[in-house]
Each structure stands twice: as C-alpha cells, then as structure tokens.
Length: 93
Image (cartoon, rainbow, N blue to C red; front, side):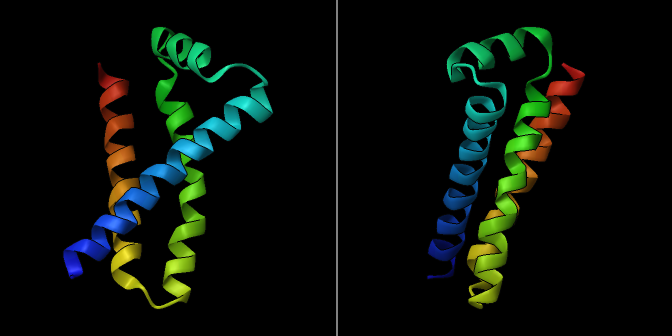
C-alpha cells in the first residue's frame, strides 16, 4: 500500500515536470515542443528546461502535504530528485 502511494506521487511528479516543460516551451517560447527539445539537446541547455519544468512540482507536493498524503508527497520529491540527477548528469556529459 505504501509503495503504491509513493509510485502515484512519483508519476504525478514526472507528469507535472513534463507539463511544466511543455507549458514553458509553448507559452513562453511559443515554439513547438519537439523542435525545442532537439535543439536544446544539441546546444546543451536541456537541463535548464528540465529545471524550469520541475518548478511545477511544488504544486502537487504542497497539495499532498496539505491533504496529509505524505507518501505521495515523498513520491513527488523522489521525482524531483531524479530530475535534479538528470540535470547534473547532463551538465557533465
């Protein structure tokens, strides 16, 4: 039961991160998602876009904390840590 709650939070965190990336690219940059992602990968700024998308993880994290769903909040936190790890690896590769 606990692992299921953490998995739900993790999936919510990943989806929130992807949604944040999509919103940033489509609303702020006003370009197509696929084009920006491939260009960002080529130019080495993919980590910055992932970091901007991770900002949206604050919303589900604090909603889960407020609803006392600590294990789901833990899953969102794990997804955010995974994003940070990917950013760190992308900076050194």
